Each structure stands twice: as C-alpha cells, then as structure tokens.
Image (cartoon, rainbow, N blue to C red; front, side):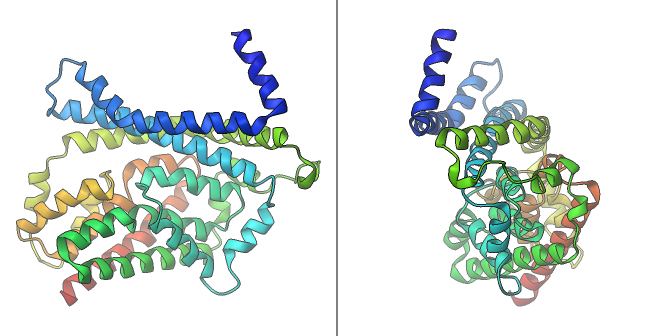
Amino acid sequence: MSALILPLQRLHRRHPLVLVAVAAVVWVLVYRQLEPLSYTLVGLLPLAPDSHLASTLQFFLYDTPKVLLLLTGIVFAMGIVQTFVSAERTRDLLAGRRLGVGNGLAAALGIVTPFCSCSAVPLFIGFLQAGVPLGVTFSFLIAAPMVNEVALGMLLALFGLRIAALYLALGLLVAIVAGFVIGAMGLEGWLEDWVRELQTAPPPRASLAELSWAERVDRGLEHVGEIVGRVWPYIVGGVALGGLIHGFVPEDMMASIMGRAAWWSVPVAVLLGVPMYTNAAGVIPIVQALLAKGAALGTVLAFMMSVIALSAPEMIILRKVLKPQLIAVFVGVVASGILAVGFIFNLVL
C-alpha cells in the first residue's frame, strides 16, 4: 500500500491539478457505470427481474452511490472555490442587488441541472457552505427537481407547448416565491449548528491569493471530510426509503384514488405525492396513467410536483442539515404553492 501512497503524495505536492484531473476522470467513469452495474448486481440474485424486491434493490444500488458521488464532487469543488472567493462575496453576489434577483438566478440554475430532489441536496449543502443566503438556496432546491429540462421536454412532447410553458412559468414562480418567503422569515437559526459553524468559520490564516494549489486541494478534501462524513448515513436511509416506495407502491391504487376531478383531489394528490420518490422521467408514466383514467390535469401535475420536489427521502437527508422546524416551514410553503398550481391548472384548462 505504501508503494502506491508515496507516489500519490509526491504527485499531490508537485502537480496537484494532475491528480485532481485523474480523479475527475475516474469519477465520471464510475458515475456512468452505476446504473448498468446496479442491474448487473440485481441480476445475479435469485429474483424475478420484474419483481417489487428487484426493483427496490436496483433503485437502492444505483441511487445511493450516485448521490454520494454527487455530494463528494460538489462539496470538493465548492471547497476549492471558497479558496478563491470569500463566503461574503458569494453571499453578496447571489443575494442580488434588487428584490428577488438571487432567488430568480438560483431557480434558473435549477432548470439546467437535471437533478432529482435527493441529488439536488448536495448542491444545496454546498451553497449553504459557501454562505449563500438561505432563501436563495431553497429556490434552487425547489426548482432543480421540479422545473428541469427532462420534465419540460416530456411535457412538451406529450401535452404540447401550452402545457409545458404554463408548467414552466408556475413552477418557477413557486420556486422563486417560496425561496423568497423563507428567506424573508429569517430562519437561519433553524439550520443545524454544524452548518452555521461552517458559514461563520473565521477566514483562513493565509491570504486566499497566497495559497498554493496543493493547499487549495487540501481545503477541498477537508470540506469533503467534514460534510460527507456527517451526511452519508442520512443519504443511505433516505434512498432506502425511496427504493421501498419506488418498488412497492401500487400505481393502480393511486390512480383509483386520484382519478376524480373534485376540488379535494388536489390536496389529496399532494398528500399522496409527498411520501413518494422518483425523478421527473420516472413520474411521467404515472402522470399518463392517471390522465388516462380521467384525473384532472391540475390534480395530476400537483401530484407530479409534490413527488419530485417534496419527497420523503429528501426530507430525511435534509434533516442532517435543517432542524425540524425549518423542514416543516419548507414543506408548508412549497406545498401551498403546489396546491395553487393545481387549482390554477384545473381552472384555466
């Protein structure tokens, strides 16, 4: 082992960027193999490929390392970025000079990041770590899973430009307004203590400009150890719950409950969607099935938004970062926005 470690240490001291580049290539190669590897591993087990248990295990074996890899990569990158740009400067930049500008920028960033709710959490943590305002980070966390290019592309292909554009406008509105409201409430005290300590940590003793690249890489690795070391059990638990829901919740039962256009179907749809977990691509087939059984479009889209923006596994992962009071506020504000979207769709379409 020492024969491998010593050359790596020398490479780190002399050419740290080469080592980072090699690690990045390995990261990408591993990330791309996660899904086929999960199917291969499940295929080795004595399970029917289309069984509920096989679906649950495949989901867990794919999503757990995926989210952990995303968390590690993003936190490492944010740690290095912090050695160039102070937390105060980042906070001032994304806070915006005018009302809600930072929320709008964060929500727009969410559109081009194809993350599910749990995959968006690592970047949410990275934003908090960099000192980005709380409300702005929430605008990203809401928009990333709910209004991404996958959801918009599939809605456009299946339901046309009008539906896709209305979904985009209302989804962004929910993300921006919810983030702004949460930010205006001044709830930073409901972040977990270790997160607030990261935000308020004193600046490094050496000037940012004086740091070598080896020292910057070390800072990134330190952030990975601090954050990933604390959060990973919650990620494993959250994805495990998501896998159980993904594999065992019957679609026909949901369709029979939601397949009505009554006013109460919208809040029921949101209540049904919150405990579930999938991404936009995964929920679209359910959307089609519900619409085929006569459910109102607003009801179904409210269900879709709640599934991909307010999943129970996401709440489990966020619990390591946020206190229960802040999670409750987050769920309440976003659910209210989703309810409004569902009722608006049902009224205008």
